[in-house]
Image (tube, rainbow, N blue to C red):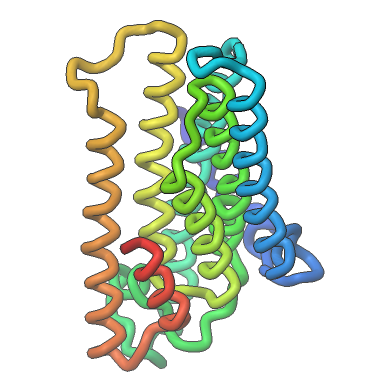
Length: 259
């Protein structure tokens, strides 16, 4: 990859004025209100449940609605978006560490890892990493379409799926609303896993050969859970011994939802 291309990608993923100047606010960010969040989640649950009830009444149990390759194209889109967010927040975190490290002396943050786990008290939801956190938040609503596909194609509606998707949207909102610590590592691990899992679903959805072990997606999800557990322990340790982490109340609720 040429230097010019790398510089161009770095600029558009972490140095573009819109990304650098991003600020999470009700007036500037679409979907940034509590009413939008709860309305969207309620609508998601209502549409999924209603669709499942209607199909159960009109179609026989072994019948499904043909969708063609729409789910596979959705998987491709989600894989590309996840990879883009991963690259964007990775470059943005590196840039923020470079630009704000001098300020850490006023807090008890000493290393980049400590900053990734524990934002200093008073951190505002603005700048590069929060732009990509906002992008991740918006993709949670695209992720919800998998439930619709499952109802139409497989005639299944799992309460756990409704809860997990709703909880992820809620959690992503909390990250932004309260400048919650730990979100950078959470987004990095989640988007990395999602880019692989959705890419795998796209690949196998077109009938291409998959991996030898059938539980590939489950193993990726378990790996993500393990990373989250380790990160949560790190946040708690930092909060107790380093004078407090920003957004710790939201982090506590996030931990309950993860559990």
